[in-house]
Amino acid sequence: MKRTAIYPGTFDPITLGHVDVVHRGLKLFDRVVIGVAANPNKQPMFDLDTRLAMVRETFTGKARIEVVSFSGLLVELAHDQHANAILRGLRAASDFEYEFQMATMNRRLDERIETVFVMAREDYTFVSSRFIREISGMGGDVSELVPPAVLPHLMP
Ligand code: ADP
Image 1 (cartoon, protein in one colour):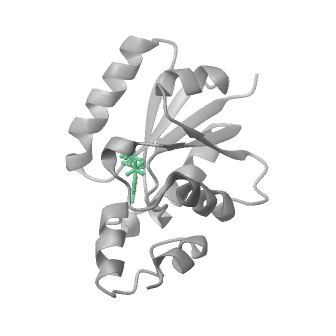
Image 2 (spheres, helix red, strand yellow):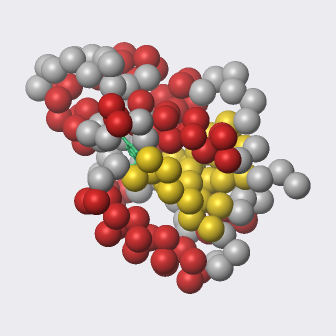
């Protein structure tokens, strides 16, 4: 049986922290499906098509990685993709509260799907999409914190 995990997120934009989480996921699962959430209520800086394109370009040619968008329930996406796990990343204690609530809610919605947390490499623990948006918006260099596919979209 193939083990598939869904890695959901806003990816606004994708960072090397996210990429690291995906690679860790591939050690545990045969297939990782990256679910780019439409998330209109979060008012993302990049529209869905751009966020998808940046994620797709980052993982082109990677056989065990798939990239899809979704707007409904995460557990529905998991069903559609025949996934038995949700992959999430943890940086610091500050991530825990929200992640705990989401994992508990998803478990209530479908007890068969397990949420699995991985920790990114220490040098990425401070990297967040918000940080990337803010720093690059002020002209700072974030080229060592995001995959190359993101850079053209950050240029003024
Ligand atoms: P969301 O809007 O769902 O939080 P994000 O794109 O911000 O989506 O994050 C998706 C997941 O990746 C979350 O579980 C988040 O904690 C994790 N993540 C983001 N950046 C990092 C990082 N630098 N190290 C580890 N996990 C991370």
